[in-house]
Length: 460
Image 1 (tube, rainbow, N blue to C red):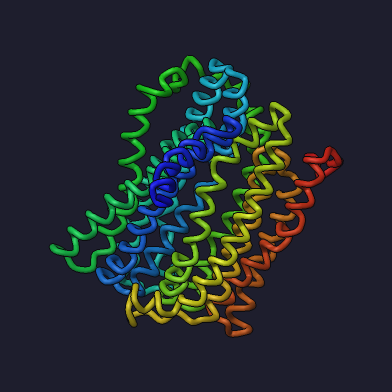
Image 2: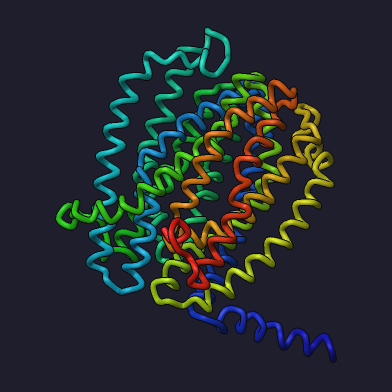
């Protein structure tokens, strides 16, 4: 009798979960649930990719690939923050139902980024022949020619992705991040199938791996851009006649601050592989990234939950709905506490999991896992208040303490890794220290803004 009653009420519970509450919250719930499924699939594929790629190459070549691809990714900051600027401005236009303005924002951003990446690509073509990639990546001189070609291939696909990724910005601005979250898993699945195929017919070819990893997301973005701009977003499909460079100032005005934050992110999050390669050698990048991938699980899962809130906070602040913002932040803080427990569990089982995952081919020190766990906890906590601050566009303070973190990141990472002989664990510890100001200043700024007490730098 009791079981029948429970079964009878399950559909009502599910229905109430997706139908009750503020429309903004309902939209977020739907995107979060779908994104969890997609991200779970993405994590599974990513975990399968690591041992498959590692066995096809070797720890040293795998480390070279990871470092080279992260260096090429640095060029992403050349969008001068326009992607995030578009995200906020487009969310405002959607909130006001001003679709003509939305189309102008989209068209102007596309053509501007096309001009920027075109110039950067020409610059890269000019300097690449003179770059000694074998020296940069601390590997043998014999690989110089091969690495130069690989760098060119990676950068070519990166340039295409640089433009095409804007479709994800549009979906996220419309509070539909679940669609955007689907692109990565599909690209990873294509990469997984392709790499499995080449392992059967070729032997340890870094060039093949580079083409597969670089081309897979581009293929996905080409198809989804065609699909959405000829369907759901036909009314804001970019066109030359809708390009108005007068909007560049409003997009880039906020975008310049985001641009500086992107440089901060570049230094704090994207230089670790290069630091490890230069100090410890490319082979040490492999255990670092295995640990990083493992502890990225809670960060990725929390990003699913937090992702719809950026544009939702923009929508709410535009409509002065601070009650909804307060309720949402309180819920997110409680969820963060649950994730804190989850990270501790991951740390406790980490050594057993590594052995089951990659075997004894790569050794990951427990101290590295400890600091990776700390990094995950900090990333999640700071993302709660950082997402709100980004959504309302009051990012100047975040920019300032981010710059401080950026300036100290490399020196302290090198000091811990080399002088204190902590190895790669010292590098991630340096990153944790660089992120520390946001742990305190982010919550303070949120409380000031939400209670109408933010003045000066707190309100810029």
